[in-house]
Image (cartoon, rainbow, N blue to C red; front, side):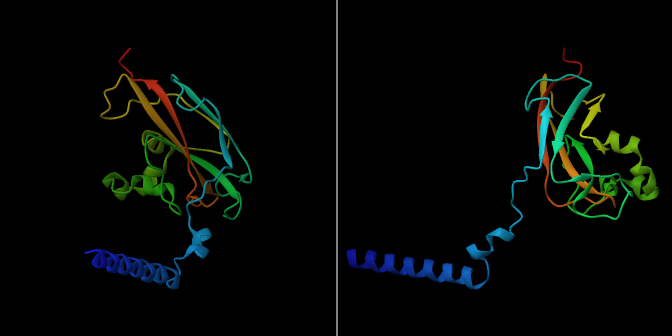
Length: 185
């Protein structure tokens, strides 16, 4: 019995060695880890309000940004080092490379009239805001649909947009704030 266990141990060790060498030979080894997109981006810092603090409408969110030149849409050729901010309230941001047109994806109204789904009013109704400033005041953050808790945790996500209107990279910064549910006080 002891001999059989020893042979199984050797076989398991050999199997692990074969798998590990296969990983290295296929290019998935440690030397390529710096090519992965999982990086922490410390360029943006929220200034106010403090994360998870309790706020009321209207709420002003302030941040600072390093190593990025703020520029309005269409003001210069698109690039990764300049653009503006898009803020998403209680919803996932658009995918890297996408434009705000994708906010209306799947909406039959937007298929009929795509330009109407890029209006400021439409985007605000979807919880999407853009700015060239380092602050944004939201006059009316609404209740989270389906959430009946008296104090709700709202998520505010900022991504970078290039001057051509495409999301730059995968970086996203989140701020969670507590707000009393409208109608619960």
